Image (cartoon, rainbow, N blue to C red):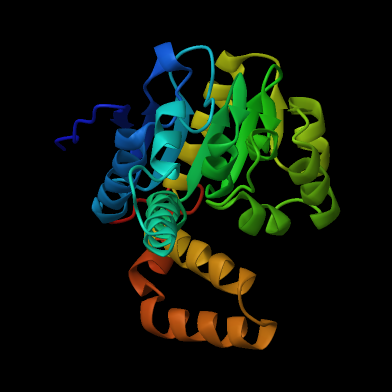
Length: 270
């Protein structure tokens, strides 16, 4: 498998598990314009690559993500003698583009596990909110920081977090911008587990990813599709959706492979 190359990301692959690394360690992995675009390109590639069954999202350096690169703020302020209506339209289109960049993570059919260490603020929280699961080392710090720079978070935190943690907690964090440490993040359900060290974090998240990768890939994709659909639809609609999915994509080959394997690990096609 030939892995794509990126300016702001690094990509590894082993045993059906791809690891996407935020790779601007000298900038605390702040999200500049190339990184936003590359995140979408990367996760669209991961979605399409049959050999990839699970994705880990992690970061190089001492921090996970310091949020939006300050250079991008220049794009939020209209320059020159521009009509206010047209300036507002340009800003709206920019925000929609950034939303789409991150939504590619959620729309990737493969489970995405975020492994967070150090600072994860602003856009970093938007980023991990798109993932299926989140894990952290004990020194990790989370913050919906946009309120402290005079704006409302607009690329996903306020829309996705109420489906992950209690809505009242989301409101408190969004209104105050306060820091949440790893212990509290675990307590409120933002992360599945917290680990003493970054090494322990990466080792265990790797184990979880490999465990998922050993399951039937089409069944895992069905589970993710069903869970995302259920989040935004009624129970009745969601039951109809999974009935339709299994009617069309229940794999007899995978079921027989799982049954005949017995105590051995079954092997599945990608």
